[in-house]
Image (cartoon, rainbow, N blue to C red; front, side, top):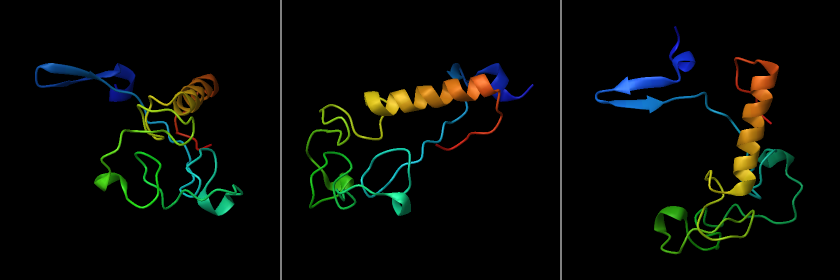
Length: 109
C-alpha cells in the first residue's frame, strides 16, 4: 500500500501524518496567488519588497521586523504561510476540489 493511503509514516519513535502537497501558483511580481509573473496585470510591483515584512530595501533573510502579510495586511504571519486566511482558503479549496474530482495528480490554479 502506498504511503499516501496510510496517511502516517513512522520515523523512529514518532508517527508523522502525511498528505499530498497542494501546489498553488504564485506571482512573484505582486505576490498574489492564482497567476504567474508573465500574466500579471497588477499596478503594484512588490518583487523588490521583503517577503517577511513587505517593506522595500532589504530581503527576508536580513529582515529584523515582525512578520506582515502583504495580501491581507495583518501582522503575525507572512504571505506564504498557512496562517494567512487568504492562503489557507486557497489551499483548502484546492484540497476539496482534488478530493471531489478524485484526482491522483496535483493541479495548478
